[in-house]
Amino acid sequence: MSRLIVVSNRVNPPSDAGVGTAGGLAMALAAALREYSGVWFGWSGETIESFTGQISMQKVGGVTVALVDLEEQDREEYYDGYANRTLWPLFHSRTDLAAYERSFGEGYQRVNRRFAETLAPLIGPNDLVWIHDYHLIPLADELRKLGVTNRIGFFLHIPWPSRRLLTTLPQHKELVESLLAYDLVGFQTHDALEAFSDYGERELGLAINDGVVEAGGRRTRIGAFPIGIEADAFAQLAQQDAARETFERVRASQAGRRMILGVDRLDYSKGLEERFLAYEQLLVDHPDWAERVFLLQIATPSRDAVQAYQEIRARLDGVSGRINGAFATVDWVPIRYVNRAHRRDELAGIYRAAQVGLVTPLRDGMNLVAKEYVAAQDPDDPGVLVLSKYAGAAEQMQDALIVNPFSREETSEALGQALAMPRAERSARWRRLMDGVARDDVSAWRDRFVAALAGDVAITTAPGGDTRKAS
Ligand code: GDG
Figure 1 (cartoon, helix red, strand yellow):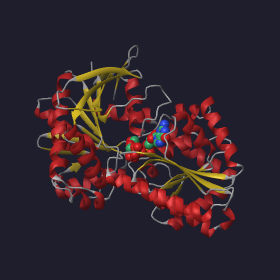
Figure 2 (cartoon, helix red, strand yellow):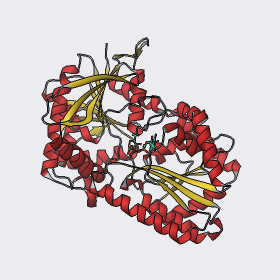
Figure 3 (cartoon, protein in one colour):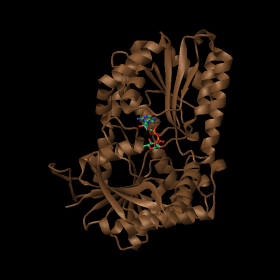
Figure 4 (cartoon, helix red, strand yellow):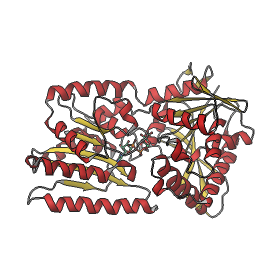
């Protein structure tokens, strides 16, 4: 019988369902592991003086987690370095911010090797291994070197960069070739899949037929597996007491004004500065909206050890302050800019109170906020989603108002359209969006990926559950 072993850089299942502040990836993986019996392996987030490979097993939120500590040098080179300062900016088309330092690449390989050596003894003969995200691209290759022959899948949560950009990375070939050690490689979108295929065919000379790459005697399947949210659970959360209380509080503070809402990790890929400027454009072009609307932007600080994040934070403080200084009146502040994290149920209430959800990343693998905003709406009086065409979610959510986030005029026009949209059109768009969010939810994503990885192997589900036969 097969277990599912999930591996990601950080392991942080929500400790109390529905209330934690875990990010998109964590929510999705916790949901996956609550269903299938298995183990979630990764870095504890802690550092020790010298690496021991000692695993600490714990049960958190109904999920068995296996944690390993790293060294401070690992954190600097692998996490702050190669993951956050090399791959993240490159894969989000920000080569101007990407640092190509040899020590980062060495640290990345070292940590992937350390993970492989620690993880290999945990893997049983029939276990399926599902590895997540750009921190761990070479992990399967390292496991193969140790003799692991199990089926191993990889899912990339972020975009795949264009071929020309990717070739700016020293050792880009080695990095991409290491993906061929997997049995299955999943991307968020068809766009990412195409970009990967373009690189594979033209830089590595790979033959890719019907989503299968054959190279070096191995077969690797590739495909698009767009991630979803726990749609029904989130819709219910938005109607529970804590969400209702927050909803009432926000509505009372609105004093009849329309609210445009943004919710993001504070990251340069999320297009926050462009968003503020587009909103300013709305106030300039449509002075009649002054005092009748405001933008609530929740931006939770992240990765603040990295300079580019300190810089974007300072810029946003400046831009929001300037716009507020220029447009505010004695009883109206145009932008409420909040750097505090909120409980998940409070967030659901805030989404529900907003007449417009403004989700305008410059580049984003999927963007779960877009889906959460839709799931939290009141079906009788739903808000309008304004969505960047560069969010992976745009491939599925064409009933949103789709915008080019680099154009402040286009975004500001869409804001005007959203604010004035009649209820019948809002309802019709929302219904179609909600049907998609509910159908392509996180369970559907997980089951599709695991089925594609497992083939006809039976997988053990959570204690008391049945055995699933994936097909
Ligand atoms: C990566 C990819 C892909 C945000 N603020 C608070 C809070 N959040 C939650 C949101 C949402 C999650 O964090 C953010 O998810 P996103 O998908 O928007 O973005 P990333 O964190 O960049 O996620 C992305 C995702 O992985 C999954 O594959 O979609 O493209 O970049 O769930 O609700 N949650 C709480 N308080 C906050 O203040 N509780």
